[in-house]
Image 1 (cartoon, rainbow, N blue to C red):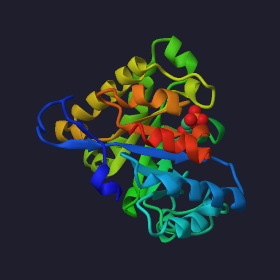
Image 2: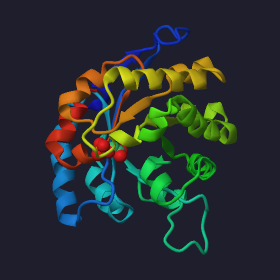
Image 3: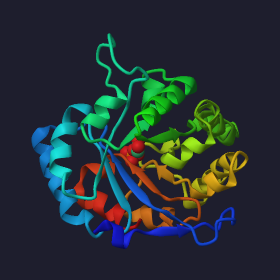
Image 4: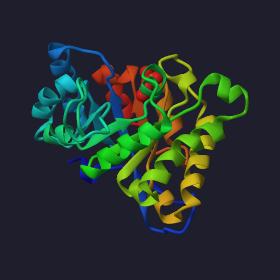
Length: 268
Ligand code: PGA
């Protein structure tokens, strides 16, 4: 059903691919929230409205609920993703979950490099790039998150910071890997704070990120989805998603309420 109704953005940005369109994607990052009962209710609420979403829809539950959510989503077009992945394939890595396990549970996507993993778990750009490659090797689509802190923005380092985070992945995985991956710009100061980047602030960084990719391949840059994340709500999604280089959103808090999440999907 979704396939008939997917919103798409003309590739005006870099111009060469006349006629090609980028689809929009709205992804819910549930973080470490919920229990089996609340998740059952949330999935049912999302499924009740996702069929009319103009955007592709993705949900990323905590690992322990992947099987439950996979079973509930099975006859729908809503995609399943995980929030993290190990760089290792298998073995003595207590607490970790491999890309092949995520695939086995029905995931087609995985978040890598979320700022909470970078900040709380000390994940470096090199480790994030290794996770990206581990996901890619299993055919999972990474949603690679990049973003600057408030201090970095105020020091005028936004573009340098997000470029370094993105280029670490491009250096290891190669630009063609972005044909099957998604980039998410999430300013750290906007995550869970209620402060959203203005549509213009976000667009400026998205355009810079697309230019980083274009320096390696204009074709890949033109086709690459770049999501915005950071306090997206139904009330600001339309303005954000209307920007030329914003191809949907990565949603935290507002993805925990089916009504709000579907309201954001409707803006896709
Ligand atoms: P938020 O989180 O929507 O609650 O700001 C976004 C994210 O961390 O992906």
